[in-house]
Image (cartoon, rainbow, N blue to C red; front, side):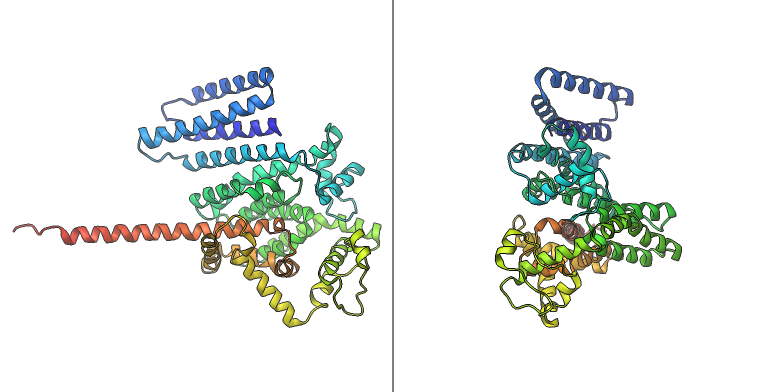
Length: 468
């Protein structure tokens, strides 16, 4: 990933240079200087290799950010107009450097079982709607890369790493549009510096692409006023690709579409198209599932069977849910007859246990217990308060809708049991951090205004009265 990392940092440097360059330099001269830098990097790449070019570009980015920020803040003593672009460029470049450093170590590790499954399917077919035990889009995206790569295991990490970097400016820009530029930069910076996310994007999994698609959906749904037909079509396509990538996102996606239709006053035709288009996009996969397995929901029922084995092995279960032996589960975690997700969640426990588990899981997430690996309890308190506060902000109420509908059901139940992989909470964690950053920014701004008002009032009181 050395050459892609070099190109990304160069792109970030170009964006920073063009947005914050001193006004005295003409546009043509800016372009000539940028071209000279590109030519120099190309010469270093050919003469010294990919690693040297990457190191040169990384050091150059640090120098460029320092010079641009220093010129405006130290020399001119004013805030540059393109400050957010400069900050996001620095965040993206820093996140890229760290992810490239971790990727070099991760290449020696074996692929995770899920990634190995995607690899095997990608080697068998290019078909993005091929029937299988997992959503086929991720496999299809890797199929051409696997056939061109010299090392198939390394190729399986390519898209995950690319989207792991792309999500940084995507989150920063979208949050800046929907909340505030400062909130966007801080949220992107927190993700860039998160050691868990740095390692995750080097594993070959699909969560980072899902987050980028979520950002596109949120921007199309809630940026600006009103809703055009173009937006409805685009959000339908983005949502369709999202559930094509990971089908469990269908519930929060539909909830957000309904909320947008109500709050944005869509026409009934727009609402119908917006809700149906994602389902139409993913429909061919389920047709193939039915043709292959005789059951369109074979994948979902197999996953539910695995959850039953994980939770109830060695415990009493209803008579109509036969359990495999421990030896069978050791050989295959999904051993046994398929079980519907609704049967697992609703039919294998008492109503009081169901409600208790749901509430306990929601508390774990909102209070930050699920994210204690990298965030303090003070951070968790601010983020929990921010999430609750979004209920009172009509413009930001979509955050709590996304979080709750992403959690309620099987996902939050697994959180309460301690069995849910943290990567499945990535969109929730991003909204959690965003809400907390937004809430703290509000406190700082309102507190700063109050302090200035009190200071001015005190100065007026202490000012001696003029002699008449």
